View 1 (spheres, helix red, strand yellow):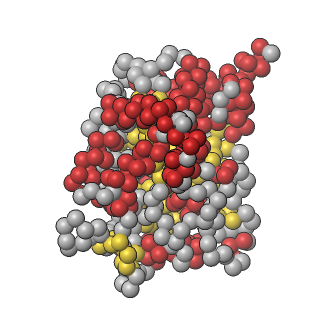
View 2 (tube, one colour):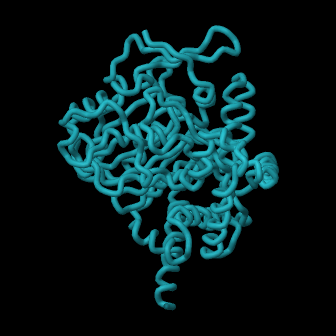
View 3 (cartoon, helix red, strand yellow):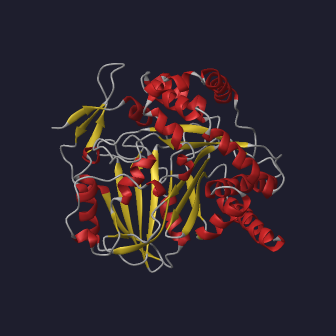
Length: 458
């Protein structure tokens, strides 16, 4: 029977499950047509179950205090237990799909089995949808997105051919843009000895000053009182917007001297500005956590997967009064993070927390988690159409889990020339998440209008 210790960092997320914020990564694929049930299961079994042992293993706590849990093969493993095949009620639109997901967002994954499940939902908008729930202790969201993308093919019948034994790394263009904003720093984390080379020593004073400022930021930042934060409950909800043409976002970034990520994250700042005003709150800057990849970009995923990521605390400029001001300040703050060692420090912090006991882990994770409203991810996916079990994928979106008292998860996913933006919210704090979605769409429309105004001026 396979058995191995749970990595200290993976242990953090294993121990952080709680009723009001589960450590589950949620993802969604919307498909153009119905999916063959047996063909889909076979694809998952061969490309995920056979490649990554943790998808056949369950966590077992140690009987001794201060000793890490371990993964062991599930002696009764049956992949059928990890699938749900259901049909959405008519008319099978976004509302019915969201209601199906909402009913499961607060349900913990069974720890007596490998902690993942996939729901194949027929009757969605003339096709099907695949809703996946994967526990954070298996791997970070960046790695798990690669795992899910390994189910897809460039042509409808490619899954019928013999698949390779390894999952290649996601090409550079497919990596999380918000993650890639610190790619240089993230790469340095994997080559720490370079920090003692002369050219790095020469910048030691600059690094020390930056480190002092970042430490102060991490310790002193507070999530301000606003309609966005408050006590969390068990009930969560998801909503997503209509697809946005990626070319329009690229053009806006080009004409304003900003990146695609700047534009999409600035729209989030504006949405929160509008939402707070809608609920008669004072405009404030709202912090969010952004994951940063620390895996080499050119290596395949290891079979053991695991968590290899850092987090940066990004302060959304949601207090500013105009869309252009918010975009300019978003760009400035993003650039500052790119040029700072914040990801390096937080990666070390996460690793250190993973080597403490469960009680101290919980205290420290809550301490830092409660400084932010939630987690924001921006994942540029494949640039051309992909297929799963022979059926074309229409759209994709996913959400990282929230922890502590976080209330707002933002998932941005670009695929095949379009961007999908979705929110996973605490239902107590956001009883009508559609309002936030409307505010995001209004802000993005205004930002895209800057491009038209600039073109007219020229």
